[in-house]
Length: 198
Figure (cartoon, rainbow, N blue to C red):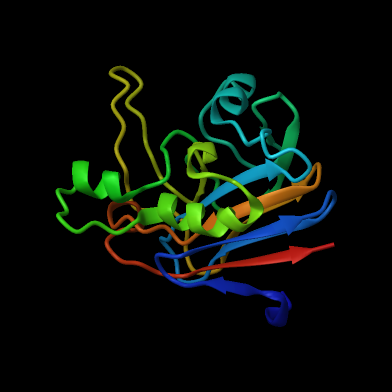
């Protein structure tokens, strides 16, 4: 991989950028066990946004991998997974936020989390915080108990250099983070790398 083309997202931060139809986005875990929250919007109408509910409904399963499309709230394919070296990602849990850290962890001075990082990164594109959906959480490992429905957040299965590759099915605005939740990242905060090709 051409390292000069790889961009790095610092731990506990996020970015936003455009992706043209047909371009590929590679999300890389450079050191292992680090989640990246990904959201996508139709660049020409940001009311159209990636949808966990529609994607999982149409896939009839919660774990998505190579070949799977990611649908919008209008049932159009925004992204398609074309390569995946991990095979376990989450599309159920919302981006972590200051409220996450307050409610789940009891933090009295909470970090703004992926939600806050996405909100800041997407603001220049005119996307308001209330328009941020459930993210596709690259590398996040959320096992489900099939009998009770209970879920747990376990360490990611990703190792250094693992990646997931998406192709854009339309012109997009992408938000991408290096996740800020200790539990999601096996207790430490690490960077995320990404590359846009095509």
